Image 1 (cartoon, helix red, strand yellow):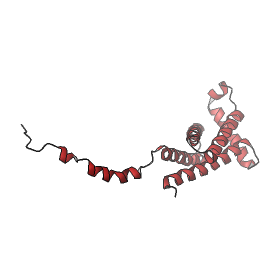
Image 2 (cartoon, helix red, strand yellow):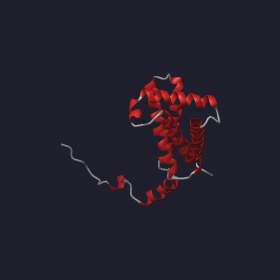
Image 3 (tube, helix red, strand yellow):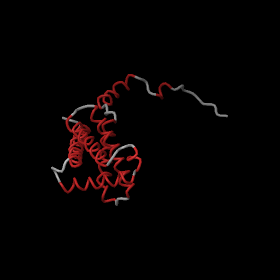
Image 4 (cartoon, one colour):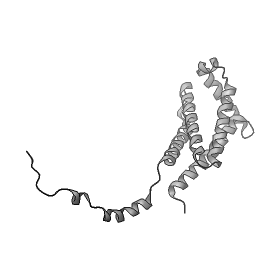
Length: 167
């Protein structure tokens, strides 16, 4: 049976991956929801207007929206389907992306209800990354410890016996 840690990592990976595939697709195409697509277009125009450095670098709202959407879809697919370390890399990129989106929302002065989902998914990405990177408990080593403890003398047995002179 899988450990609770493994179940948690898999559940978070699949749920987060599907969410980011969905959100990235909304940024790329109006097929899923024309209203949400138009709202994304409007939002990214305000982000580029609020950050003139992007315009100086030649990044317009369309390029920004499509590149973030494509990165979300790619990382979402990796989080959902690819096993191993690539999930952690995708998780890290998505976390950076969420931080950038939170920065954009703060920059344009959006109310909390407009970016609360980004906060929640940022926290979930952080939790998933921390759980995945935490070393697994070695329960077999803990069970073996009492046997080896009987073979080795304790600290009290090793300590010299006698009086300690305190001055």
